[in-house]
Image (cartoon, rainbow, N blue to C red; front, side, top):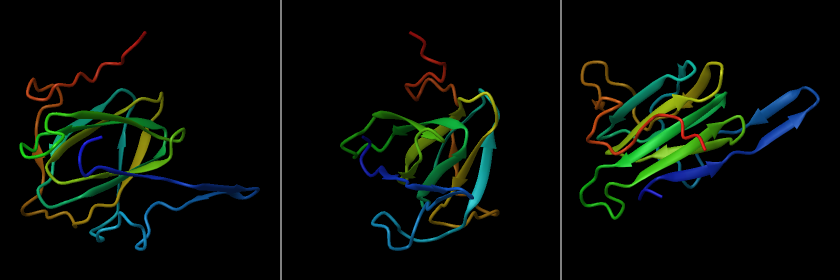
Length: 151
């Protein structure tokens, strides 16, 4: 796994009324600090990526549907430099994925309906100077193909 990436298995507690799932607590080992909480979605087959942050650490959870979340380590001094990780996150695999700074990430909705992601970044969004550095999702600089792998 890419150096600095952390995963927290999420516990779903169901009962006859519905279910509860804690996502991130201030007493979790991987909690750093709170910036904001936001929701983003993707429609079936849509890829949102690539980007990385210089200050912000992301804590992503997919709460509806399934997403393929892909990370690429472009940090030249990292022991996992040029490594790619795929994570399948959502209703069938409820995890929180913590993405460190300078690690490219993107996601693709892999269900036949809109997938919903909650992100709890360590920093609030800065509208005047966004901490987002983007790359085309099909850039040859990142060794990854977003196509489904049949077989």
